Amino acid sequence: MNLTRALPAAIREHRLANGLEVLIAERRGDPVVAVMVWYKVGSKNERDFESGVSHFLEHMMFKGSSRFGKGSIDRITTELGGANNAFTSYDHTAYWFELASDRWERALEIEADRMRTLTLDAAEYDAERAVVLEELSMGQDDPWRVLAERVQAATIPRHPYRRPIIGFPDALSSLAVEAMRDYYRRFYRPGNAVVIVCGDVDADEALAAVAKHFEGLPAGDEQPSPESFRPTETEPRGEQRLSMNWDDQGKRLCMAFPTAKFASDDDATLDVISSLLTGGRLSRLHRRLVLEQALATSISTSNDTRVEGGLFWLFAECAQDVPPARLEAAIDAELSLLREELVSAKELTRVKHMLEAAEAYDHETVTDIAEDLGEHATDSHWKLAFEAIERVKAVDAKRVRACARRFLRADRRVLGWCLPTKAEPAQKRAKPQKKAKHRR
Image (cartoon, rainbow, N blue to C red):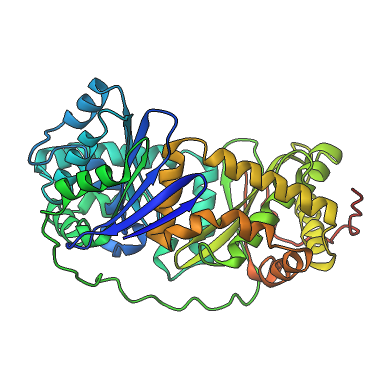
């Protein structure tokens, strides 16, 4: 047992005999407690024929277990005046409750029961599959989502990260309930889970409550995933380009660059770069391309790091009368500037302050803290959740330039355009614009 004090909560960690990792985060003040259970399984653990099973199983976790039948979890949560939900990622699946501090233990009863005794009734399975397939179908009506999925698949063509989390309709349509039961048995067990209790609790009492509900659960068989082999993604050998068409007037650009792992030093540097480029109205790309030159109606970047690698995304919507090649060339000029020149101290300080403020905002509620703790505990180590802003503060101008040079080059990216149906796709590279000058 280890007690660590670091704002914004005091953390106690413990591991039960069955392998369950437990983190208790005392955060006094508001009479609220967040309870989360994280499983170290996501879409990356799926085989091709199971594509989408992690997200589908997340739905089924609300459809009945030995003690809590269909609809009971949401009904009980409402009666207690709380909230609950769940989410699935490439690397993990998480379930959360937020309840008042005099009734939060009920969440532990629910989570302990459905960890090992999920019903997976065949009729409910078929009904919920129709819901998931409809959700998937709605996503295919979104041009941004379709474009991003195509770009991702081209960027990491061999790794399971290439698949969308929600899966593919043909795989989901043919997935038998027995396959989900096998998946559930393999991954939903104490030794593959982390329980977080965060908020207005006494650490000793909270730990005793977790032990009361979970220590009697069988550990389950620790089996290697059948998808344990991970192909080595080779360094890109030149830019890849793709195009698609959509029946509207939008001209959408998506770029993806393979990058680094979650919680690495490069992760922090890429956060800084993303904020430099598109973090607010004073950011480089927004100020120049949206406000000053009106080449784009919107532009954003995202540092998407994961356990086994990451992607740096750039999305832009081209202004109506602007040729796509002109917007692309302007973006290339800005990325070139980032690779060639050192960021000014003033600009770097502004971005770090913005990220520090965002970090404080992200730890405003007990559920925010529980989510941050859970993500780090599942995907790296929970202590790194409290070091994120220090890693950002350690980023200097040379690290920004070196990171941009290593990752954000045209010869490493996949670039996709979604153009109006009647328009000719832009295939040729435009001549780069003169390098921009930035004075701040």
